[in-house]
Length: 363
Image 1 (cartoon, rainbow, N blue to C red):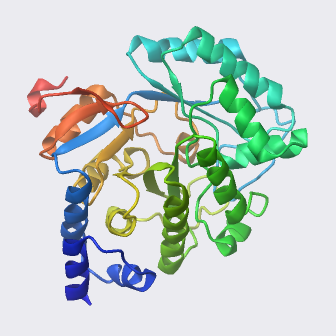
Image 2 (cartoon, one colour; image 1 turned 180 degrees about the horizontal axis):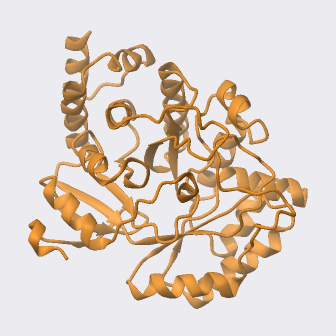
């Protein structure tokens, strides 16, 4: 079958799910080469991108109680917090000083927060920081707000877009297989609801990203099923800008007995994602969960983007993940991979290319 796979890649032909599952049997060097060939078709120039952004968690109160989450607290918990607009502005001031372009707002499913909280916050950010692109919230949050307000999710999306929301990240996807979702997050929205909200966002002109949190309890066949439903929706709408996979971090969660996936498992799944997702332009490599060295290798296994500097990221930090970065380190990391570093905006438009640098040039 390897000969057929190489021929399909050379011809730019679509892979079946059976062929995609076979890819897991290949060695990592072979997969890296195949994924690089596919990446070359999408990105012929040797450039890797990143975005300067901030990830603000608006509240840690959440009724979803997912087994894989170490961040949430229940309503009434003494550790509960909810940010005010003033709190958010204090964080955004630091972002703007860096010349940053993107803000990602996310939080738990907090029963005390109605639609007006979100609409007022979005409008205030747009008024005070018109240069920022608001890439925020997720399908579970949209569905929760809609249920609380007794309004259709499409109406909620429309109101939030009018208030200033530019696009949706792919949070809450985990694995888009209901068997997995019912086991690790039974209170979270179903696969069809997640896909439906993304479809609605695309239909009203919002582009979004897609994600996958893997190496939890799913099988490799279920990873391919996840990729398959994303590819099908992309065929329908063309609304996904990028796909970003990352591995599950089990520490401090109810799934803490799980053994965390290694870098090889991550790179293999990343490469297969690039090979299979023939209609999504950008693939992200995740330094937050995988560490900078593995993320750098991801650029040689099909990824073309390193994500953002993610100032203020707290959710993964609650699992013990303490990775952090800055612009200089991302420039160095990309340069050391033999690629040209470039800063992009949320729409993956290049803002600035940087000359490749040697290690001693980066402070």
